[in-house]
Length: 124
Image 1: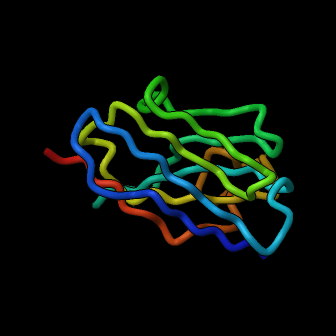
Image 2: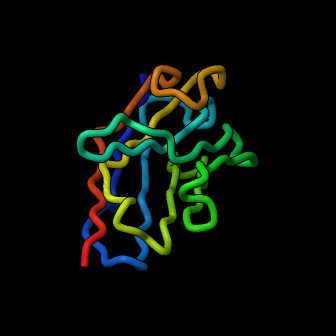
């Protein structure tokens, strides 16, 4: 069992930056593929990015590539999402997720554990 806790969300103006953190506990963090998802009101939960177990391979969806950076520090049991040049459309609840298998890497169903989410609001 893995417990995930996100933090770092908040209200930011367009063009601003935030860094989200996801701290894991309860099991060996480096055994899990990790991901960030987001869910805007009235929309399905969507993948933002993934990072491999050792952190060497990352993926970011087209809409955030070049603005967001995903990373992890296994020594700190923590995954990060650095968000720069934020836009109105980035407003959502951001969730971190952990998977034992990479088979379902791009779907909600592919992840075994979820955090409670942290709200990111981009507004002027």
